[in-house]
Length: 245
Image (tube, rainbow, N blue to C red; front, side, top):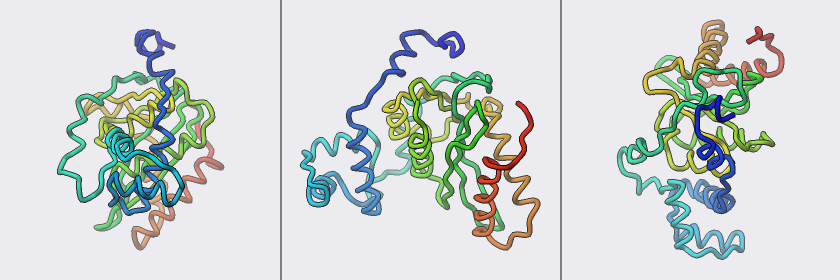
């Protein structure tokens, strides 16, 4: 495995066996945060934990976990906040264009119709070429990528040592994305900057999706386009005849 990944034994086992004791608390904190429309700070979340779930958690611990996973109330966000983490969260390319190994590839693509747009986040299994998970949103933000990642995690039994490969988009460089992967033993891999061929499988998949949806149908608005894309994704996983890799 280490020879294929071209990494040291030390690096592989460091990330393969990572277990984050804060991960379960993070999921509950994030749930309350989302229910508050992303407005609650750490003190209100600590109060909600006690009143709604009967969980007494020190507000300092709540703050630490929120900082760790980059959970910030909308009113407290500063412009280009995520850029503070870009350099330190960039990961090496562990796939190295070997697209026939155990792993996932992921990306976000535009769904454009007229002057309206939506965003599709997808995770593809390299071994089967199946869609592991997807999410569609009218906002291209970290939440879109995190929902896709968490959905994929819930649908998969063995995550230890699994590679997930993406580009260097700001969502994939966030602390929240990084910590969720580490907490589940997933190895983060990233394409070189400005090199889409490093993630050719997902690029090709999104190109195929647009070719077989937008260009083949009489669509009247963006909502019809989104509905069509969702039908095609189900068709792709369950019925579409695929050529051998």
